[in-house]
Length: 379
Image (tube, one colour):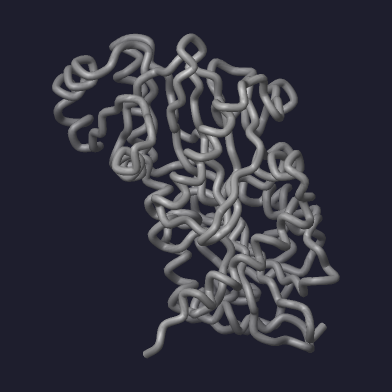
């Protein structure tokens, strides 16, 4: 046990992608190399409680884990509570403080956590917030740092970086929630002056296609803006590109490499939340797709370029459009903590590139340790 790295897999979280995170974590925990890693599990509930969990991995995806964790302690004592107080609400809960995450006390042979694997998607998970917590705790963690995570999560700002890096992308308009509520006519005019119908409307900070709509006319645009504003204060309206949806996985730190590419043929009008996680069997994934070598190489180069431009680390998935008529390549977005479910593209792309799922998990953990050492500063 002493030679193994102690890895805390954190899942759940307070975002619209809570359920997706649980499914990803269950898959990671079912495939992680237990001969290499001593694993502990920590779930974050939707109301923000951190619970140590020692139950069956299979109950994480179902959500049953939370009930089991709540029954884990019955002595009314609070463990390492730095957030909130030991009141009636937290009594008898195996609560783990965020601040003391590197000193999680689970089992008789407890020792500090060596690495955290935050299998968290969406806001408060892959947007730099929890990454900042791990930085303050001085514990290695899987994935991009504070800057890369926050830029990758904010689609509007990542577009600015991509433009600076010379990566082609579609036209777009950014508006804020207050303008949607008070200046809808002006917002509509701005969009119509810049873009044509149909167009896509999405929250600037969200993932898994949450809050996204395709607007075919002014009426649908108004509904789409109102809908997206439920999820973020800044809204992105993007040009519709009649393109094939192509994805590329990136792995590494200072010398990242790109996987083979894959094409998603969604079962719905576009690759929305339903198509990604509820109707996956009806959407088609082609790895590799029928594209010429030059196009594939350009996509891989753009993926690595985007990864470096945002100062990403560990892993990311970069999504593109290849125009069906012209063959032009446009970057869509980057995902700094891509899904790890059994139908997720990131592990599929690396499996097609010769890296098994279990090996991939080991690699991202090792990259976390490497990055942490490289970031060390003298005080």
